Amino acid sequence: FAFSTPMLSTSSRALWQHGLSVLCLTTALWMMLQRPRNKWRLFFAGALLGFSYAVRPTNSLSVFFLTLYILLNHRKALLLYLTGLSIPIAILVFDSLQVYHSILPPYYLPQRLGADLDFFNALWGNLISPNRGLFVTTPIFIISAFGIYLMVRKGRMVLNNIEPYLAAILLAHWITISSFDNWYGGWSLGPRFFTDVTPYLVYFLIPVFAESRLWSSHWWKAAFGTALVLSMFVHFRCVTSIYPMMWNGKPVAIVEAPQRVWDVFDLQVLRGTCDDKLEGRAPLCWFDSGVPK
Image (cartoon, rainbow, N blue to C red):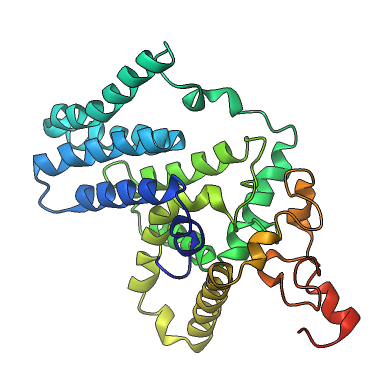
């Protein structure tokens, strides 16, 4: 969670919204998972979810699905939960009315949704593009997808458990960020828009660790270790070298040529390993000039 995901390369690098967003969602999820559940924990969970929406509007998906979970499974605490949820949202609305004379600020309105004319390119690009794909830059999350499968097989995907709601958030979040015109995240490192749901992706690694039969297999240990090391390498290099960030502007700005996210011969994580550290395209330069320098 800390060293092998966008938590390292995105949340900890700058004053993005993502860091505070993840803090709210992680703490809210932790409170909802406590047994026995104290009603006041759900009050604070609601407050954190409401604040997460104020921090980043895409967290409305977490608000919706986790509120549905509380509604269907914890009705006795629903009023307390909704009270906590409404406080930060009410403050957001009050501020918006004062500043923008509308219920919500422009940034929170859904005008960006559906703006991407190449939706399916964005849909797959967010998962498997060489420079922005979640599963390419953070392959450990491929195993999270397997964790969801294990939850289905074990019968955990029923409405009285929190798992189907978390899976629904992941699916809805993927579709939502793929509808943005700048679905690739602009000047950023890896799958920036997936950063907010990192807690949920890591949560679905838990059933994988609990599957003792898997860990008796050498090939499984090798596959898991490889995914973990590759994930750590990508995010560690992005925070210890300036060149992966400079990739966004050289040789042409990513916002002007978003198709660069698909260039397998010009990998963001390897920028700076050519003779021309600023603009050299790696691994392409390796074949042209021999050993990288």
